[in-house]
Image 1 (tube, rainbow, N blue to C red):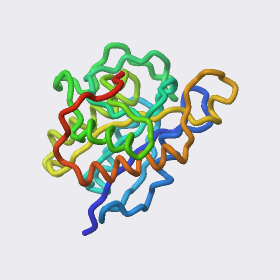
Image 2: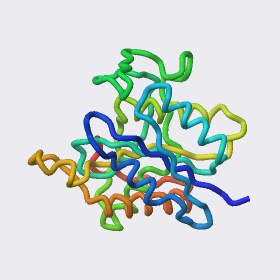
Image 3: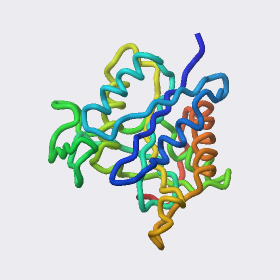
Image 4: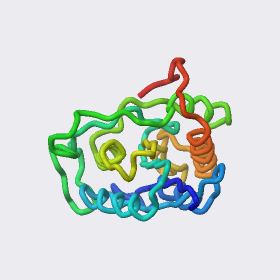
Length: 218
């Protein structure tokens, strides 16, 4: 049975016509990374519904590595997220108008989970490849964190996924998204695709993280 890397991205939200997280994921769909095949799945930007789509993907692919991507407008680099919080606290409504405030992602679950990816090593390797990257200490409290927390909870508690590692990465806007917003950071989609390609390769090959400063943190 071929090993699988599950790579998820979101549909557009917040009035955008594209979401770079999904554009990256679908660009890498089918790529063979160190003997593992990448399978891309689009998640709805909707509280609850995103988790149903995630669960369906986990059941279908039984991956050994899961990387969820999300758009973080205003950030200038690929962000390797450290921690997921057990809270939904939406600043804006999701794509179906849902806007939970101070709600638990998983009632009774731990307050937080850490990524099981070697995030400092990944950030180092991306920078070495010429792609701007940094460790981030906050994935927010919108649907991205909702998915990140739920993923880590499932990896920690589901026996069928006990072998899997996973985490979350935020990606910047593309230049096309900010064409009429002077001063807003962006990164070319091709650069983002190559950055995530490098991150997946490093995640497969690296188990232990490095002990060094994380660079610019969020």
